[in-house]
Structures are given as C-alpha cells and as structure tokens.
Image 1 (tube, one colour):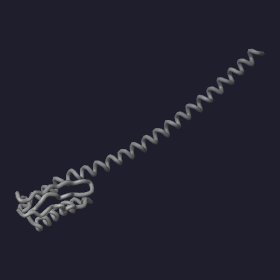
Image 2 (image 1 turned 135 degrees about the horizontal axis):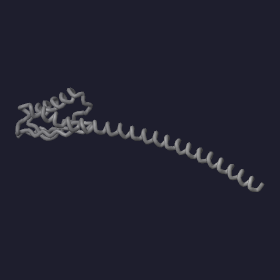
Image 3 (image 1 turned 90 degrees about the vertical axis):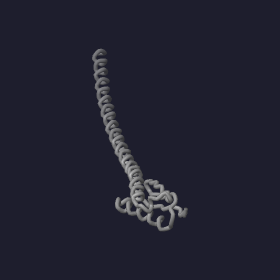
Image 4 (image 1 turned 60 degrees about the vertical axis):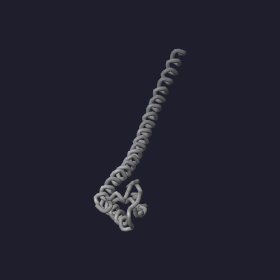
Length: 134
C-alpha cells in the first residue's frame, strides 16, 4: 500500500505541477501581450513626435531660401547698399541687417510676409532691419 500512496502522491504532484505550469504559461502570455501593446503605443507616440519635429525643421529650412529669393528678386532690395539676412525657426522668420531707407525696410517686410501668406505658414515675421543711409 505504501507503493500505492507514493504513486498517488506522485501523480497528484505532477498534476498540480502541470496546472501550475499552465497558469504560469498563461501569465507569461498575458504579460507579453501587455508589454507588446505598451511598446506599440510608445512607438506610435515616438513616431508622431518625430513627424511633428521634422515638419517644423522642414518649414524652417524651406522658408529661409524662399524668403531670401523673393527679397533678392527685387532690384531695389538687391543692392550693395542693403544687407538683408533671413533666418527662420519653426515659430518666426527674422529679417536682420540693414537697408538704405524706411521704404526698403517696409518693402522687405511686405515681400517676406507675402511668402508666408502664400505658403499659409504660421510663422510670425520679425523685421529687425536697421535703416542706414550710406
């Protein structure tokens, strides 16, 4: 009978062990699914952040040459007496340097604003040009 009790005890332990392993396996599977979902959500958020950041960089890097080209296309502004630098950020377009008159400062600002309006850019214009008659 002792052999019978041992066999029964062994069978009982093996059965409990199998149930325990099954529960552990299901727990691991659930944990893996939850972790996968969290990784997926974090990846999506990171992708959105990168997309927004590159859009801002793209706007700044394309606005500067567009505004500069429009200003230098004007023969009055494209004069050695004037020095107009254009810098863009994702928030603003800055006109810096000097021009020969208030009218040219105003004209440079109007041209730059025209480029922003044409592109529906949300950037503000900062006209920091200094009037210097030479």
